[in-house]
Length: 318
Image 1 (cartoon, rainbow, N blue to C red):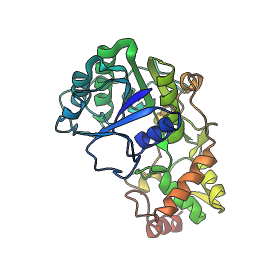
Image 2 (cartoon, rainbow, N blue to C red):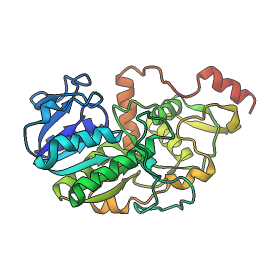
Image 3 (tube, rainbow, N blue to C red):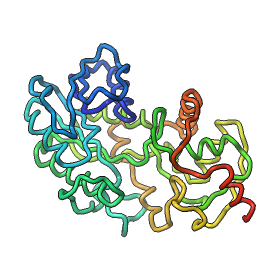
């Protein structure tokens, strides 16, 4: 299978390319060439820039599928579709759980959950616009390619090379052990998906030529915020004591913490993706691999979370 990847050298795209290459796919990468230029030697690269609309390098060539992991606004997707046209068999678009409405959602919601209204009058990515912009992208892909369109809506993706701080913060904190300030409810549900499970799902969907939309959520067994922290402590060989502290004592909220009305958004149904071949890596396996990767890169400072001094003050008042 010949696959064109729009992106492919960062986090999710990197995991997909690694898996697809192992499965024997022929990969072509398209991007600016600034992220991971040392990755995947021997894989053809075509240079361009989605922000400026430079798709000149894609005016020639044919692929069985295109995997779009770097489309965030309708212009990105529209320009890519315009230049590729029918020279690709299937258009895969990586979307987000952020496309869904946030109220009136029950636990176990599936891919038919109502989505937010699409937004097309801005390209500024904020918490308010990110989901509606992805909705617009989805709509455009389905309108152009129909049964040749596939969309995956992942939850929080976790794994090595994750540049976001959410799980990494709690994993580092669990590894330190001791009393852990928790400005949230320990029973809050948490859904995370291993980046490699997501990658394998994409490979299977393309290999089976499956259309439609799919949730990519995990882990293998439902977990909670407390469960995730304790799992992190187990893989690190430490012990933790979770200490509740007032949620309003921490601003902004710590990563992964959600108010109770949002809990059903962390309990979505993965049945369709599981039936299509998405694996279910145990949470402790995922966390152990993230811990190893984080330590190998030298545990750089994180942008979010409590400093030890801030946490000590919260614990002193608990």
